[in-house]
Image 1 (tube, rainbow, N blue to C red):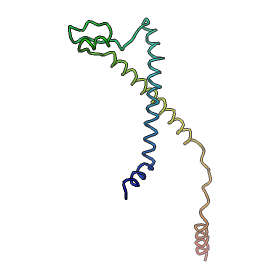
Image 2: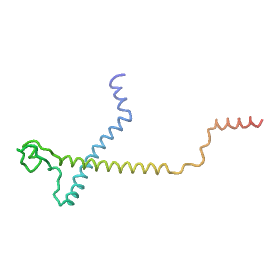
Image 3: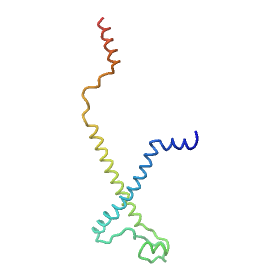
Image 4: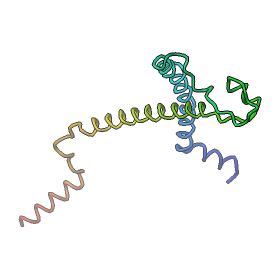
Length: 143
């Protein structure tokens, strides 16, 4: 088998295509979550805490040479412990995990509703050959 045909059969498998679709949707979903956090959640957090609340500039200077008030300038001056960025990433993670939880919960609810649908009460009739064999058996029993 040539490399090209082997590659073609590998790509044609359903798992690879499903994985590719998942990665593409995941990339788009990351943008949605980032926008949700930056444009909706953080402004609400800022309004609750008195406005102007921004985690990204929270840092601890690890050097006495660092005197800048913003994280970007402080990084130019020396080493900093940027815990605000970590807090932002953690908030993103919690929101993402909650959204995925809600999605899985919704899918599970749909599956449960699908399973609760009434099933046909009467079973399907047996195939003709089985039915014929059953009739022959019954005739032989009576003789």
